[in-house]
Length: 236
Length: 312
Image (tube, rainbow over all chains, first blue to last red; front, side, top):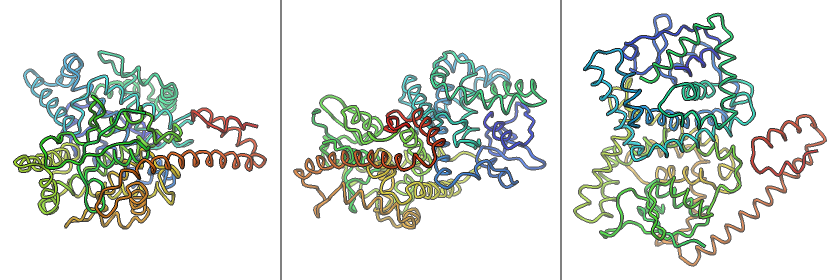
């Protein structure tokens, strides 16, 4: 969710974050988050970026063709590695599943619906992991993959303020969303956030974006409060 | 230097050493890095391994996925990425992720799911290389796995019918090909004059699309409109996979090729360094302040930079 907020704030578009229990059903694609503008509803990062671009705001206009290709490639890397690792950690690591994911996912529903829905989601995620070959991975291997991904991001960022030097782009929003979530969410072990913390330029990057786009507003405290509750809903 | 290594993988046809993208990637990397691999193509014998191909066997170690095999080769000092900077290494990972997410579903679809292609080309070809009665079962299983993978990773809402999913994955694959073409531009390989891991992966994914003759070929037609990618595939085939008419490269020539290649890599490296030094010397009187900042960034971003020695 944070990547969307970050992206929209970077485009200087005012937004209001609302948490609803039936959010997944309101969304046209069944995926969270989605934006509701006038009488249009758009979900998922790709279509939202297109929608915003059609309205005249785009963050990647200043990039040449090769840089745009690179940006798309890095966004796929983040989706491929970080997102899958987050899913794995939430749904395939037994300790985390028992203690955190099941209670959180099933919390709006009464028993036995909460258990049924969370088992169903878990089965779905595990099927997907098996299809892409992640089912055989141990937690240590997943953490190593995350480390490799963070190393790549860290090397690409180098000492620049954003990934494509002076201007933030969709990639910055996406990376910020994922890394901030990893760094600030409470899990049974801190290994995942430790991996990210190893790369000081990545943590500095997150802090910089947080300060620039999330704390310099009138709705200061409400933005961070909704950001924290939005983080919790990310674990659904 | 190292123990003899054997690679077990699917064989080739239509001018390719292998039809299977992952096997092709590993073979290409081995050629680029000069690793001496004995390639065993899977044939009709029961002894050959069939699950999880390609498989590398070295003494007692058995390794199965391309990424792990490449890691193993790198540890044995067969490293094609020796000259890459840290940032280029990061770019490699990103582009490989792009290939797997955007191009692989369409590749799998063309080979295993598209009914005409599967029935007239893929199934007979693979079935002829698997012993009976496994040949009745295994191609079907591979096809089902491919379909499963496509549906699970790309088939969620808002795409509700399979034709929509198909349309989407081909759109993504064409976009991916366009991006690769833009990134390659006019250079011979993705990172200059020597091939690296990324070149191996791109070759492994593109060559089957380029060469195999299918009845339904929308991806191949799109690829043929990108001449630099076609030239890239042809270059790799002619330079590194010098296949004779019978389809097997003579064994003795391999070691000579590997040595020549290592020598060429060293010479290229030296000439790249000399070129860099020349460029710096030429540029430094004109833009002194900018030069300093680029040097500082380079010193921070790259691990082994020859520019350090030249800071004014």
